[in-house]
Structure formats: structure tokens, C-alpha cells
Amino acid sequence: MKLPKREELKFMEDSEIVARFVECGVNLHPDVLAEIKRSPNKEEVISRLINLARKTSPSVLTPDTLERLKNAGTSDRTKLRAGTGDAASVVLPRRKRPFSCEYDSELRIKKERDITKKSYCQGSIESFVAYFNNRFERMAKLLKSRSVLRDSVAIELVRSARYTGDVKLIGMVTEIRTSRKGNLILELEDPTGVVSVLIRSQDRELMEQAKEVTRDEVIGVAGYMPSGFEMVLAKEIFFPDVPLRREPRKSEEPVALALISDVHVGSVQFLEETFLRFLKWLSGEVGTPRQRELASRVKYLVIGGDLVDGVGIYPEQKDELLIKDIHQQYARFSNLISRIPEHIEIVITPGNHDAARQAEPQPAIEEEFAPALYEDPRVHMVGNPCYATVHGVELVSYHGRSLDDIIAGVPGLSYSSPAKAMKILLRKRHLSPIYGGRVPLAPELFDYLLLEEPPDILHMGHVHTTQVDNYRGTVVVNSGTFQQQTSFQRKMNIHPTPGRVPVIDLHSMRTTIMRFG
Ligand code: D5M
Ligand code: FE
Ligand code: ZN
Image: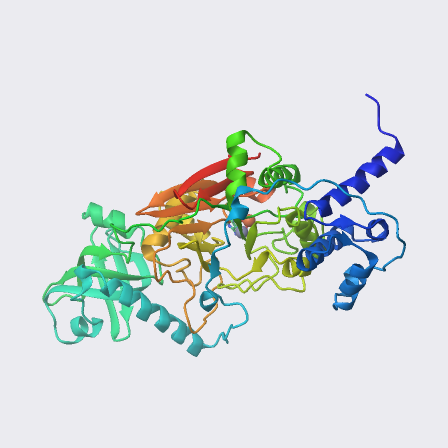
């Protein structure tokens, strides 16, 4: 095979840079091209220049436009020196407009449900009391709206007045223990008191249900208080759940939503080739006619956290990092994102590997670490969880860290079927109920993790396994990863499914899993 000469290689690189700009409808002045090539951080400079071009829409990106970028107060890390000259720019033909361009964007991010820039959390005892009160009140209201629990009473009543007979209660589970005889005892608390609830091991069906109960969630119990007994004997347990007959909302327009997460840029296991194939498909460059048709309908992309691998996330992580600087990791990520076609709107939430507060709810990734993402007019940088309406369809996107606790705590669950764990969280109407487990919870005055309304789409990631399911009309999606199995995951017996992307047609609400791996 004949190897390309040095000049040819260099030419390929130039045309690649030029093509990146042309894809966004901008031609590049040769001086600017030369400037980009001189820059020590090409990745970041290219994506930031593309962002600038997107905002100002010049037909040619000239040294003058560059000057404006410099004056816009960008950080020193990415400043470019502008050159001069009047050589002709390189012109390439523009691509055909994809189908989804025919429809206006209809994305509303519910900022009132986003913690970004409004954390009041102080971490004091009082704030924990206020946080759990907010959770209890709102969850109790959800439970009370179920007809079966309308006649529930305050715990104080069964505790004080030597109560006997049938009783219905709503309370927060403060403790779960197994008795010597194998019965299950739940401590249930409401603002008026605490009571023990006994689930007998011989009540097989009830025991099965009770296995799903976790600490700090709010449940309803129907039971019986025998005379002279200190505990309520449970007959039934009620989770807030999702109504059985609920008509899921649909979009009038035939547009589609792609969901990804856990890209882990910077990790030696990041599958860049696979990710590039995904980007090529989004751009309509690869795939069967049907796959291209679907790509042309993708109008939204949600990225549910773990954009990069981060630095110092776990011991010995350094050995598994290809890019060891967090800024550089985000620069590379932004560069990849800048290749996404113009017409796609992008929602980005943080995960536990990202540069954001670790405690949930997480505010958006900090601007200082990912300036290019903030400059990109197509990108919405939001918190975790994120609540949004897309063409009338209610979407909740949550990174999914609580799945670790649910999978570890509920028997019969595994990392290979995350949708089961996600359905349990839907039944609990809470994204991250357990305090003091693996998920750090911030005691905000408002519980941002509570699912007040059942969503039409529940999106999570974190477990690196793609799976799609439906629970009572809610599309339940785990969007997998673009990272190969890590040594830690090998030890934990976790087998990721990288390169699979769920795409939801918002009109039919059908999901297609695209495979790029
Ligand atoms: O999580 C990637 C995968 O690794 C996900 O399946 C959870 C699992 N994981 C992460 N941390 C832990 C701990 N501490 N225990 C058990 N399993 C874990 P990522 O967030 O991408 O690192
Ligand atoms: Fe991850
Ligand atoms: Zn994660």
C-alpha cells in the first residue's frame, strides 16, 4: 500500500478543519485557518470559533471576526492572535436540509425545577428537617390522592389512644429490620409520631412487595392494630405509583429525540470511533435509508451526564486516563459536540464524573470548565435532574446514581436490567429516595428529586447498559455509554453495552435502539 506523502497528510488535515466550518454554513479565511493551526489548543479553538460563527452567521470567518471573539472577553487559554491577508476563502457545497428543520423547536426546560444557581442548602440539622418535611408533605399529598388512602390517619392516633382495629397510615420509612423469626419491621414516621409496622414472613405476597421498600421513602400502609399490641400488622403496602389508565402525551410533529449519557471523554476506555460513527449518523452521512430517515428527524439530543471521565473521581483513576486535565477533557468533548448538525438542540445535565457539585440535586456543569459548551447557542446547560416539555411530551432526565443503591438493596435486581430498578423509582415517585447511601443528598428546602407528575419519558444513564421499557405509559430508557468496560467494572461483574443509542419518535412514542459499537 502506498503511504501518503507528508504534504498530502497536511492537506487532509486542512480540508478537515475547513469542512467542519462549512458544515455549519461558514467558510474559512486562509489566515484564520493558519491561525487555528498555530494554536496550541486546536480542539477548543475550533469549537469556540464554530460557536461564534453560529451566533453571528458570517458567510466567511475572517481575521476581523476573530478580533471580535478576542474582545468578547474570552479566557486567556483560548485567545487567538488574528492575522491579516486577503486570499480567497475555501468554498465547499452545503448539505441538503434535514427533515426536522421544517419544524420549530418546542423545548421548554422547567427552570423552576432546576437547582442551578439557587442552592440554599446549608447542611445544618435544621435544613435536613426542612428538607424531609418538604418531601413528606408532597409525597403524602400524592399518596392521599389515591382513593384507597383517602381515609388514612395521623400516626399519633394509633400511638396515643389505645387504638385497636383497622387503620391506614402514611409515613416515611425511617428504619427497616428483620426480626429473629424472619418478619420484616418498618419504622414509619409522620410529623405526629412513629410507629412500627410488622410484615409477617408467611404473608408471601406482601413480603415480596415489601422487598421494594427502601429507607426514607414515603409509603402508605393498611393494617390492623390488635388490642394490647405495640405494632400495626400490615395487610397491604401502597407506593404512590403511576395511575393505571394514563394517556401518554404525544407530539403532533414527527420529530425525534436521541438520548445518550456516560460518554466518559478522557478515559482510555472512551470509544471515540464509535462516538464519531454516532455523530456521522446524526449528520446523515451513514446508515441505511431508513436509518438516515430517522436521523433526519432527530431534533433534540439529551446528554444525561458523565460527559467526561473527570479527574480524581476514584482511587488510581490516573492510570485509566488518556487526557489527564479536566479542562482538556471538556475541550475534547466540546469539539466532538460541535460536529453535531446545526439544527439539533442539545440538553446537557451533569453526572457524578462531571465538574459540578456531587450532592444531588446537581447544578449544571460549571462554566469555567466547559466554556465552549456555554457559548454554543444550541446547547442548554442544566442541572440534574432536568424536567422538560418537548412538543408537549413530559421528559425527566436524571443521571441515575441512585440506581446503585436500588440495585444493591432490592433483591432480584442487577446492573444488566436497569429498567427494572428505574420502574421501582417510578413507583416510588422519587428519583433518589435513600439518604446516607451512596448518593450524597443536599438538604435543599424543596425536594427537586420528587416526581410530582408521572413523566412520559424517564431517562437515566450511569449504569452503562442500554435498556428500554414501558411502565404504565411511561417510556423508561437507560441510555448506556460510549465507554468500554473498566477494570473496576470487571471486578464488579458489570458488563456495559457501549455504542447503543435509544431514539424516541415523539409522534408515535416508539423507540429505536441504534447500534454504533
Ligand atoms: O458508573 C459506572 C458503573 O459503575 C455503573 O454501573 C455503576 C458502577 N459503579 C460506580 N461506582 C460504583 C460503586 N462505588 N460501587 C458499585 N458500583 C459502582 P460511573 O458513574 O460511570 O463511574
Ligand atoms: Fe458513567
Ligand atoms: Zn455515573
